[in-house]
Length: 288
Image (cartoon, rainbow, N blue to C red):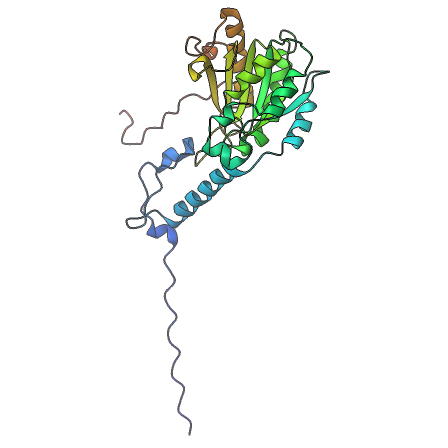
C-alpha cells in the first residue's frame, strides 16, 4: 500500500502592502504645492523604492537634456513661420564644434565660429530694435518644447512698436554669444532664449536674457533674466508680460541689468501669478 501523501505546506501569508512599510513624513501635504523632492518618507533608514526610482529617472532625463542635440533645421523651419515678413531665420554655430567641447570649454560657446561670423557680415545692413537668439544651451529639451510657443505669443506683442531683426538659431551656444550676433546685426537690444541647466524636477526650463546695447565682452550684470519659462513653471503669457515690460523700460531708460528692476508685477498681467499658498489650519489650530 503506497504511503499516504502528506498535507500540502501552508501558503505564505500575504505580503504586507508596500505603503505600510514606508514611514510617512508629516510635511507630505506640502507636496501638492511644489515639484521639489520633499516629504518623501522613509523605509527604515533609506528612501522608499518609488522615491529612489523617481530620482534615477529624473537624473536620466537631466543628462539626456544636456547631451542631446537640437534638430536645428527643424527648429529653424518652425520659427520661419513666425518670423516677420522678409526676415530670414539664421542658422549659426558657436566656436565649440561638438557637444563635448561645448561642455568642457564654456569660452568657446560665447563666440561664433568663422563661418557664422562671415554669414552675418554678408547680410545687408538693416538695423533693428531687437533681435531674438534661440540657443540650445544646457537643455535641448527646453528649446524644443518652449521656444516656438513663447515666440508665437511674444512676436505679435512687439509688431507695432519694434523693428524685429532676423531670428537666429545657434548650436552649442552660451548666453553671451547673443551680444556678438546683435552687434553684427546692428540691434539696440537682444533677447536670448536658452535652455537652462536642468534640475531634477525641471529638465525643460528655458531662460530669457535681455541686454541693452549688446556688444562682445559684456558680462552678466548687464543683463536681465527671466527664468523657468515652461508649462509647469512661468507661463508663456507671464513671461511675455515681464519681457515686454523690461524691453520698454530698457529702451526708455537706455540701460539693462542690475540697474533695471522688474516691477512688472505692479501692472495688470494677462495671466496673474498664483498667490502664495497658506495651509488650512488643523482642527487643533483653529481659534475657539
